[in-house]
Amino acid sequence: MANINLKDREIECKIVYYGPGRCGKTTNLEYIFKTFRKQVTGDMVCAKTEGDRTLFFDFLPMGVGKVKGFDVRIQLYTVPGQVKYASTRKMVLREVDGLVFVADSLEVRREKNALSLKDLHQNLKEYGLSIMKIPLILQYNKRDLAEQNIPIMSIEQMEKDLNRQLKAPSFPASAVIGTGVGETLKAIIKLTLQSMKQKMGW
Amino acid sequence: MDVKERIKSLLQQADIYQAQGLLNEAKDRYMQAGQIIKQHEDVIRNKSLLSSIAAKVRAINDDMKRLEESPLLREMPEQVQEVIRTKFSFSKDDNLKDMEGAIALAKFGQYKRALREFNELLSREDIRMDVAKNIFRCHMAMDLIEDAAVQYEQWMNGNLFSVGQLGKLRFFLQNILEKKGIDRQLPMPDDPGREKEVTQEEILDISSVGITISEGVKKGETIEYDVSFQSGNVINILISSTDKYLLEHLDVGITLDQVQFYSPMAMFNGKAVVSAKSKIESGPKQGYYSLDIKIKSI
Ligand SMILES: Nc1nc2c(ncn2[C@@H]2O[C@H](COP(=O)(O)OP(=O)(O)O)[C@@H](O)[C@H]2O)c(=O)[nH]1
Ligand SMILES: [Mg+2]
Image (cartoon, rainbow over all chains, first blue to last red):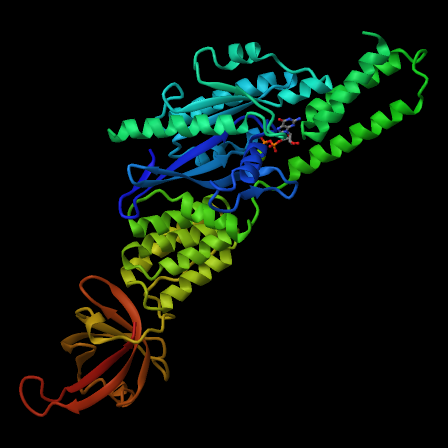
């Protein structure tokens, strides 16, 4: 649940980018950091391995204006994708307000997408949250690879694989060039704020 | 698809997967390409292709190994630690918030930084015991067993913790050591090794004392006396004039290095100094010697 600070009149929302290893979560945040300079309120902090892979999380703080006189601060996080970092993923997920599930469009990653979504589902459940109820956006990333003749899945296929029951809003994207990154971000912020307002009875 | 096209496509995929860090997928594609090349040696003229693929697979294997061996934890830059400390602490209560921040650092394996935070939190009396236990946990997580023991002994000789609290901390740490199969006996908080100036308020009611003789023919012998009265850290005992040997040795100013103090609650060891000695001239205890003993440390 969003952290509401009455004294400083601030609302903090936590949005987590989830997904299998190497699907492009960090690339999403990097693009946001570069592109939304006005909204970004601090450094992007990357807790990574020596080999530049996400070890704990990436963190990016943003400010997105006011709601009812409250400054709305959004904190974006990514999780490490590799299976062995299960406990870290769960720690990052604590008190999450909104989720972006980044799926890898590469055919070779089809199974990994499904496993990661299942892992998300399970972790949320352990925090007493439901994947069906929490603000959630799906992003089908690396669409650009089709042009290089790399086998990728069709959007229909991915919808069927991942979104048949969830029916979450979804966006195709190419995080390296930025396509779809802003749309995804705006959509998840909108959903998260809506859900927060509803909980507050605003 | 014609063989050459298939090989080309596989290698192209492999290159991209590798660039994206999808090592298993890249390796798989290189291997497939290699197999097709072997099966069609007649049509593939480029003989160096196979060896260049083999080199790539070797490089991927090395990368995989490096990744696998890369530590799950590492000391992060200050900026990352600040995010952990401030953003992974969820309590609304200020004391608990700082405590949770330090615990989060430990959970993310940032033990050195966590220790710094915990040490600052020791100043807060209401959470001090939990902080102390967490300090031990950090030492243990870093495998610095001796540091934990030294820390305990430091606390034992300081005045941050009461004897009761020290007892609990000792129990806590000793337990961990035993579970880890480490043979290291921590001193009891009321051991004679503990040099601590005693103040009036700290002294319990003492009902009797045992004085161990440190020299002479009776060396090592402990003689017990009932306490006739006590005023703060000074206790008074009566010694019969027939105990000549003792009377000769217990002169004013003499330090007694081995005294057992018995209170209704507990027994503890300490040091004391003979502060007064006088012969009782009248009354039922006439002929006895009255001895004042001042407790120096317990
Ligand atoms: N072609 C292409 N590559 C991408 C895209 N997004 C990410 N990548 C690459 O995929 C690799 C993994 O990306 P990263 O953001 O670190 O993945 P993470 O593990 O989810 O954080 C990197 O080499 C990125 O450059 C994309 O949209 N298209
Ligand atoms: Mg990452």
